[in-house]
Image (cartoon, rainbow, N blue to C red; front, side, top):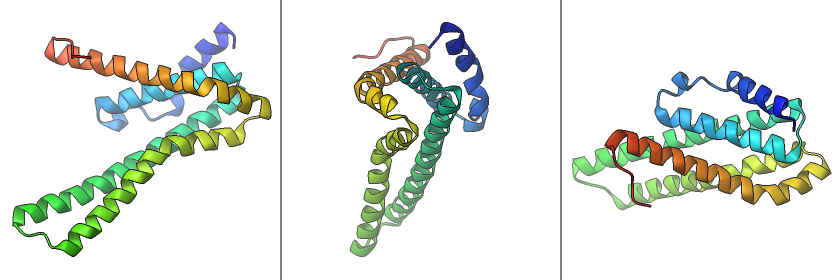
Length: 165
């Protein structure tokens, strides 16, 4: 990918995602940056066309929306559990229902990244699919590293000290 094309995508991608103010939190901005970084890395590694890069961005955004929905569902269950615990009595059947629901939600949350990558694979050419096999571990490592660095920076800016590794 040419340097000009990279800058074009870097400038354009925020237009296709929710503005960070819509997320209502710093974590939303962090996820938006991670998504932009991921799309740029995939675009570069797989030599994606502009159209394919936009499709990838939408797939990742859809996955993030699903993650938010699932986190909200989990928060609702947790709210029920807290209320029941404050009431002092939790019956076995209700606890079993909560556990079943939370386990199902957690499983879906854990599978979201893999499902997103599978969706991305569907829109790629065979050559791009092969490149993805080789590039994916490195890209995932880079995304994790970037997120960790950003979180460390946030902690440092709030506390004035560096967190332990």
